[in-house]
Amino acid sequence: MFKYRGFSASGEYVLRLVDPRAESPAAPWTQLTGQRDTTAQHGAYVQCGYMLPIPGLERKLEIVGRAGGIGAAANGREGTWEYAGGVNWYFRGDDVKLQADVTKVSEVPITSSPHTLANVNDDALFFRVQFQVAF
Image 1: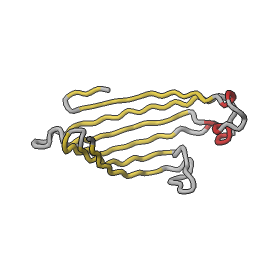
Image 2 (image 1 turned 90 degrees about the vertical axis):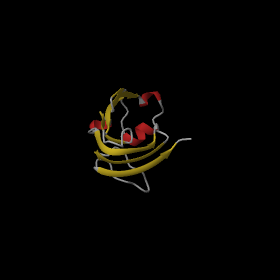
Image 3 (image 1 turned 120 degrees about the horizontal axis):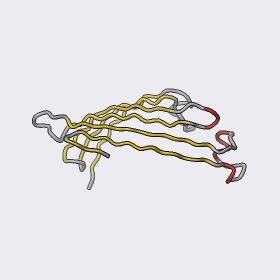
Image 4 (image 1 turned 135 degrees about the horizontal axis):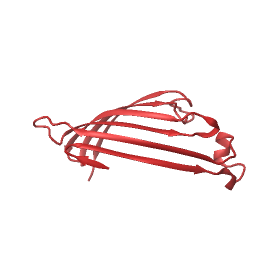
């Protein structure tokens, strides 16, 4: 995490090793992917924000962006990427804020039945508005 004069940046790298041999042949991973070998999945994200220096709105309005991805999925599948951009409005610091963003996900990695948002390997575009109050 890095912050300096209204600019913020953070990032992460994640590595997950899945070894279905340690579980029974009916392990959820094996049932879902049909893969019985050890699989390494890795991913990362970087997100940045900047508090806009508009007179009267200092520490109130922030633009944000994020890029992330997951690679080396099972059975030689492609990875998935997400790109997001948005705006945060801070009414009272982090205690009361309104967030709005748009996220594009390429190669959606999952489905959810029976009310699926997208099929595996489809692209998806998500719009989100969130009002947060901490007390």
